[in-house]
Image 1: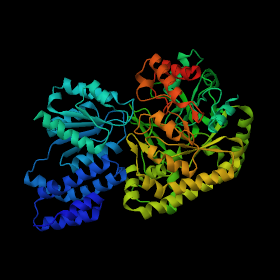
Image 2: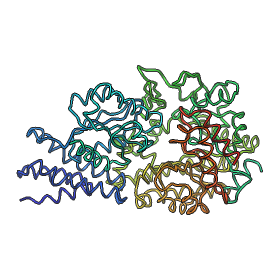
Image 3: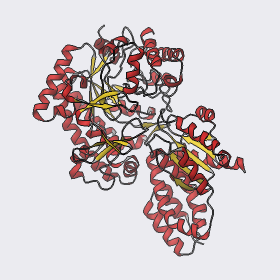
Image 4: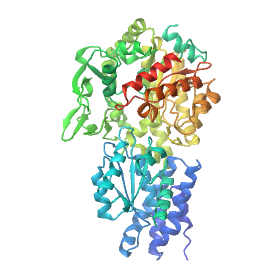
Length: 213
Length: 409
């Protein structure tokens, strides 16, 4: 039984090179891809998230770990797809129409991937129609929207209203985030959740889905 | 008291006759051109050509009649430059209002967007239709950081290639003379406190050149490479500082450095990382500034939640910090005043811009600002500004209520 701790440590300390080479070697030795993800990568990113929440890790450390996780995941993902393994859930993520900011959104996307989610990243300046069309096409259960400006926040309400109009609001949990966003605003516009940091977004998504199930 | 005396008194941690006011004294205490046009109409002031002196953030030069209406005590050194029509070109704001842009930063129209190009013709900034200000389109070091060509990077990056006035108007030896002469003239003409915008950004220049996420990964994962970049950068800043303060030092009151170190929930980096990479270099620059102009006050523009970094910033030689983002973690006004108010001038945090200024009624804005002044004013060490620039959608009635509340408090 191969000891997978080196991969856990590599992701935790942001060592992309070791994460990649260890994963390569473990897969060659016959370790199950899903085991690598669920037993090692996801717990490592959970621990990264915990350290971020209590201010041991900051954004640089978070990004370094996310990069290490991604470098391992890129070897594992094609094998998961081949074997038909299902992700925890599918997330469609994007920055709303009129807004081009994406650093925070990218961090949340990386944390979702680390949490075992399949992420469809629509980038920036995303119209309500594009969100809806992608949710339908990919059968997604979570929509995550980002905005950095008070002037673009209203596009979140417009998008939620568009989901209602299109009859697909009940199909998804809608989570929002970004510097000007508050829980109060999330409540006002009928979002299912708000988080002020990337690791908490993943926990929120898991909680939101459990409630639906 | 003159405006200048008022600002200097508060910077010396003595309470002046009233709270000094900064409106458009730097590039984070201003007003977007769209909102400024509406404000002038609301105040019943004659329509004037709107000069957008900050092409990226689309901030308007605030005219003397508005500055007087609000009893503003500060002026930016840049107002001494680009005074002639030839320095400006006609453009149109996103809401259709005509305006003037600096001649060196005139946007060009492309399919579905506005673009700004560098001198080498590369697109460095874009504003797609529906977006209200320019975003960076090119990161010079994202793929490959050739430090031998760092000078070129300054020319290819939106934030460093599209300056506000004076910008290219003071290039070269002849330009240095213009810089000094114009500063001297402004000092004679105004009794407001003069803020000279210098920049000297460290973390931000890394983020502008490499892109935020790449630069963070460099700091955390390849520290020697990050140090090499920052060493090169600080040498450039020090050379610019010599030139700048030798020319304008005697004629200005405050030199403004810039580096956003915070975000909503706290600092972007650990205090340990700040101490390793940035504190020694800030200390170097700020110490040199005081050597060149002993009377000058050092202010840092620093957005976000930075409470944990304040002791280090004070240690490095900081006199004042703006814009004091009071809705960020750790940045509640009362706590900052209590813990740091005797050592650091808080320049900002006067009116929340995330909720009150946009969604409040004028009465709510008025009461909020009065409450904030009660917290900030005692013992000096405070200058009023709203938390960052007034955005396009802020109702003019709220802007008026905000400044009137400070003036009545």
